Image (cartoon, rainbow, N blue to C red; front, side, top):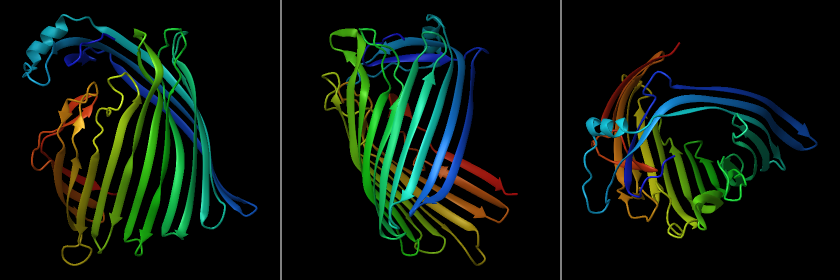
Length: 372
């Protein structure tokens, strides 16, 4: 892939002819058991998974221009100048037939009536065709404990989880990269009280992502695999049904994210698209009796704090936003009619997904659901 200058913009066109294809095949088989060994109840899961992902496309990538994100107004991007740039660039053919073979086993067992333990492990084998295709194997364990302070009402929990992502290529010495690893520690409390009228989960997490590829300081044309990111924070999720027909769902997340081991200019900086604070709330009410039985309304909001759009120097900031939505519906036994208005204020906002991505303006949606 071509390298573009910092603060650059590029354009691309994919599947512009009839030769583009994309398909996947997934087969999964699970075996579930619930049995007792001595005084220990076991809920066992053993499974196998096969995924085949086939793709083929023709794509043009082209450098468009470089802008000073602090002081200049970029030239407009329109179909005319985009076509001019793309016409001068070569088309590339991308194709693949990737396969993943997985096997996993998990068991949840009661140590006592109130103390439960969980242990699981998953192994994945990723294979690309051809002698030079990527072939990697990854092992992912998971362990957890739950203790019920008040049975079926108040529980403490803690868990460890491992995840991975395949890494491509090799270092300057010809050593193939291994999968990138993420290790998460989490603990918290779960509530289900007031006769199921209030459910909540409050948790603290600490995630360390290791074996991330970064530029080799001794050879800028190569990568080394010692990058590390850390993310820690708090998650709060609440579901409340204080009155018949009234439903409240709310959530809040705080995230402290930074690079620990990386290029010098990244150490201590936040990753792209990781705001400190995010949250949501949705309140709905449906009449459960009387002449208006089945008629409902709802309203809610999503908010996000500001975030960095680029992590090269944490200087290009995307503003935070608050988005408000509302709905009205009529719910019958056999069918449901609903209308919804998203982004009521028609706010223009962006989220960072490597590059700033504009989000949908105000939307009006209507749906009819029929149950058989």
